[in-house]
Image 1: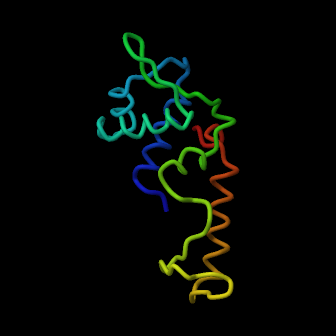
Image 2: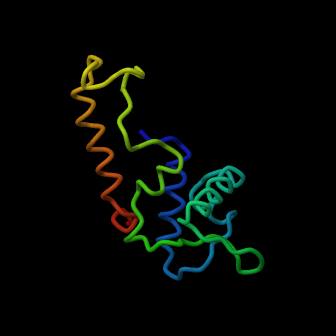
Length: 130
């Protein structure tokens, strides 16, 4: 359902949101905590900064932190930077699948696809923090 990149982004954001004392977290510490290669996670983190989801600080005491409170940050806002979750895609990959030209699973997949999109749009990072 989610690409590895989107999943890593969500894991990193949830980790940052769950810190008891919201201080910037260095990329290397974050990579160890969420078990993602540091260089790969670095690219993800910088994309989240460009999106306004994270803030970054350089130098001593620097690192990454949330730019948006977890209760105002939806899973869709995070994952959509890496995956297309809104707007249905044909499950069978047909470019011309629509209400007028449906594939064999169109009606059933439409309901599932809309439910998935709604879940990501209505669920905040705060909702999934353990």
